[in-house]
Amino acid sequence: MISQALIIHKRHILMVKQFVQRGDIVWNYPGGGIEKNETPEEACIREVKEETGYDVEIKSLLFNKQNKFTYIAEIIGGELYLDMNNEDNSDILDVAWISIDEKDKFDPYTAPLLKLFLEEIK
Image (cartoon, rainbow, N blue to C red; front, side):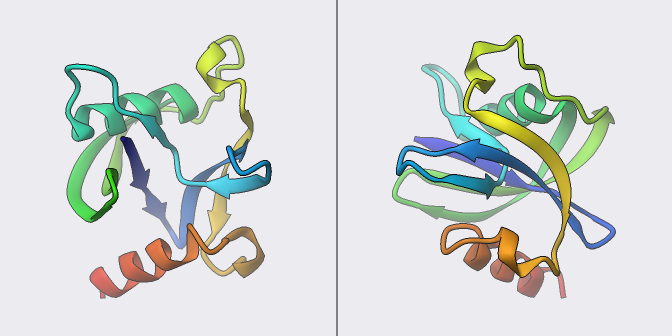
């Protein structure tokens, strides 16, 4: 099971550039596996902290399908930082705020979730 967050600030969304299981390098939303005895919400908060340095608060569940939970979250502390000493981050190449207008950064996995998010906040 996977838990991830969409975090938008001033028309930019927080993303991580990473190697994925399908063999590509893509921009993805911060998140990862749900550990034993962990709720999807707890996993989301932990994963965002591990991958980006930010402390977040879950605002709502945006989407849940096939054991993949996608939340809308808000930053409540921390600062942008990629901890390369954390072995769980070995697949991550970069972390950045990406403009929601940079369509080339979004793929068939991330683009529909961004669209859903933008429709929900209107």
